[in-house]
Image (cartoon, rainbow, N blue to C red; front, side):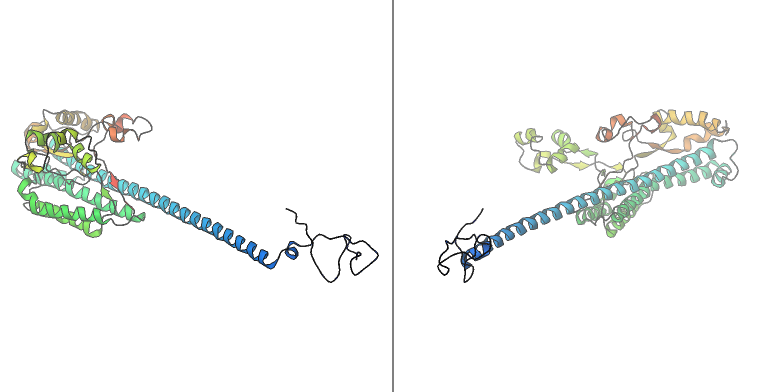
Length: 393
């Protein structure tokens, strides 16, 4: 915009070319009015003050927008960093737990081999001290005592191994800046109290014959809670599934999806129950827990059962054991003892995969979509899984 107006710039008038022109004080020549050389010279003091105020308001608006943008970027960056930290912490926790699960399974398998070598081989390999001791047992009773001690060791590994996995998971999460979660910690501590105070009445230690097995188990859980839980075992499987209940309670209370629906407020899933006249907990009738043997830690469970050979003989595990004894040991150049095989085999208890837990990946639909390709046949199995959850607020 071009401003054209009369302006008094001094005591005399200036012409267009900068030279003095005729005016009231210079008679004889016709004067010409000049454009202002500077808008500031033209505007009055009040006008200049108004423009400065408008510029100030504009700057305040710009600074406000910049401030809001900076806050938004800061919040976005914080959310992204928290998300990355949570994912890294959960991944590290799951990997650390899985490593200890693998070590525990390998230990159980090694003890199986110790039992097999001492019982089934005609000549124990040199340097195998425990196997030689078993083979040299003076009586069948002494042999059975040593075998029972090995079985109890396997039973303890089913608890200790997963608890070590739980501890390693916490360290992996914390090393990736995952904070201790008060809710996770409280849940483990409360469960430790439940184990110590009630499990002895409802459950038995199975092959873990210690009379205070539940207090030992609770002590391990309490140690985890005292250190602070940063990564929850998201696939924990708690005992108590064997219940004496009525038909309605069996339909809902024994279905894990029922609890997922409540947690997710999926009332459509519960519509049949709500429309049937549900009022309060009395609709379930009497509910009691049936006695049952435990099968290891409820956190990061190994999915391993301890079965006497007499039980396993008619099962798929028994067939696999026979194939292993007859084929694999012979392939390794180890000769079977025709005397010990039928006599002492019935005294053995083996650590075997629980078929209700283990299976091929095709059945594991929850995680099947995460695979980029079909697993190789030798790796096509699932059952001992480590699933962790990390929350960063």
